Image (tube, rainbow, N blue to C red; front, side, top):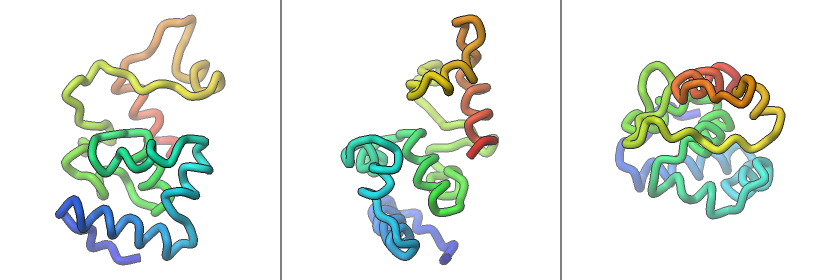
Amino acid sequence: MNQQIPSNPTQRWEWLKYQLRSQGSSLRKLSDELGVTGNAVQMVKYTPYPRMERAIAKKLGLSPHAVWPERWNHDGTPCRERPNRAEKLTTAKTQKQYCVNNTSVSNASTHRQMVREA
C-alpha cells in the first residue's frame, strides 16, 4: 500500500476510497459491516468522527493518527473541541466493558482502550 497519505483533505478522501477499493472494499461495504448508514461513514469527510475514523484506518491497516494527524493526538486519543463528550457505545457488551457500576470511566481512558483493541 502506498504510505504517502495526501495532506490535502480532498485528495486524502479520494486516496482513502482508492485504498479501500484496492482491497476489495468500499465505504458502502464498510458501513454495512459496521451496521451504520452510508451517511455515517461519509460524515468523516467533513467533520471529526472518531468511531468511523478508527474503522477506516483499521480496515486500511493504519492508525487514525497516520490518516488524520490534525484530528488525533500521538497517544491515540482524538483531538476534540469538546473533550469530555464521550462517544456513544453501541453494544451492551461494550458498555459493560467501559462502564463499571454505571459509572463511566474518563473519556481519555475509553479512547486509549479502544485504540489498544483496534
